[in-house]
Amino acid sequence: MTAPLLAVPVAGARRTIPTELFGPLDIAEEHIIEFSEGILGFPACHGWVLIDGAKPGTAWLQSVEYSALVFLLADPFVFFEGFTAELSPTELRRLDAREPGQLAVFAIVTLPERRSGDATANLQGPIIINVHSRRGAQVVLGESSWSVRQPISFG
Image (cartoon, rainbow, N blue to C red; front, top):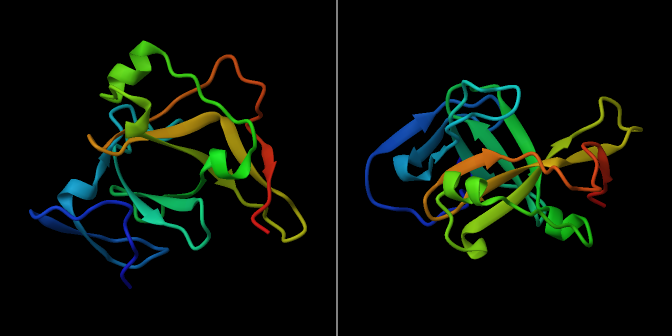
């Protein structure tokens, strides 16, 4: 299965990433996003691949190190009116960002165990990716009125 990647292909070395959800992914090394500090709860996972989701404004973040580790992501600017994310100068440096247009922002979505439950998005700890340098980080927003379990609807 070939999953569409959210990046412009760059000529160079290729790699096959085993995944449980998508099967083997053949990707260019340049598509790997480096999270130098990992993601909260997964500090040892530094390499990730961003894959287009089936619905607009969604994507999957697949670990390069662990085939079973994948997160559903949602663009908070698409799903939550009024969402903002203020990043400190330190966070911008960590992402090697010089301007906001270089950054993509995503919320990790938690799906309910039962169909009757609600999906939620973590808007307190968004995933920020510099689409040019391929650096990523999970940032904890200190001054935010948004929840770590904000209900989200894909309907």
